[in-house]
Length: 370
Ligand SMILES: C[S@@+](CC[C@H](N)C(=O)[O-])C[C@H]1O[C@@H](n2cnc3c(N)ncnc32)[C@H](O)[C@@H]1O
Image (tube, rainbow, N blue to C red; front, side, top):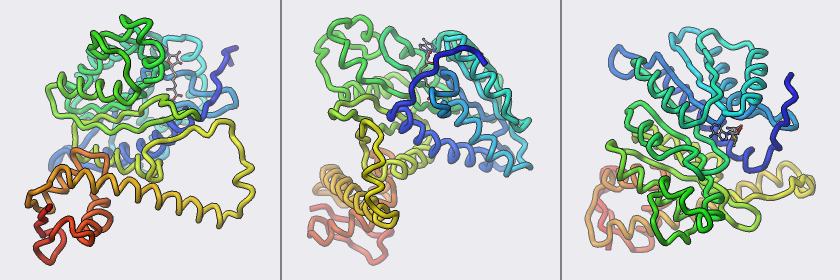
């Protein structure tokens, strides 16, 4: 093994990996089982990690490339009949890290449908290179994981983000490190100017920078895109990053949101707990812990669903709309999913006298928002 100094595994990294572990199996499983049209299947599944790191952290924790490979490999082993090619493009501009990653991967026994390519170039060069290569593939789906430490100096350029999204078959998971921007933009505005297209008024919150980024993307990419952001805060309640999921497809968007709701337990922000401390847990029995978790989840979901009630009232006030109209709006334009609409939102709104339902079958009914 090389003499590389591996990174410390931080809580924020662990949490980010929980999302990968939740979303990647869903993404992969759907692709190997879904048909594009009658007789055509996706036969090229491509996963790109342009900021791979070494595949391992200081105490042996797994990095994102290893997490992804294990997920793909396990699913392929259970699906021996699927004729699919899985191509992974891993890159880090730190050569030592790629050497380490390669050594780790060579020790894994991977299904022969998986192929891995490595590069040690800048992420911007890597994205351009991969975009050129993948033009050759047909019936493909591509997921880019873009996970830099910072945003400064166009470490990933807006034009590359756009180029990725000009292709119909791509999705992005972007670790948007807004803490870097909030901390440094006033002193070094030129380092962020291209990415956010900002000239003045640089004093903004992490949330605002994330909104600016998403609005710019929506404006500049010619195709329709759907985004879902998950916020990660430190112990002082300062946003460190947003994990931003970007896709072209409503169905993919729904799957992303379901994964976010599952990991986040209904709380769309994660607060860093600081030092790991198992004391709290050991004070309670497993049963009591489960109950606490469930109660917390119910409180969070309840809070969030209160938000959805407000959102629907603002959108439809004074209007008569069908369930399908409501569903389309919620699924395409909000972080909420279809299962949040009926029992958790429309029924309470009806009970509170804020809407009137016309019709007996809930899904075929029309709703009047007062
Ligand atoms: C946050 S770490 C990636 C973590 C990894 N994706 C994971 O989840 O395990 C960022 C990595 O980007 C690499 N890096 C920094 N600047 C880069 C650049 N301009 N191009 C490519 N890699 C870069 C660093 O060497 C570091 O390994």
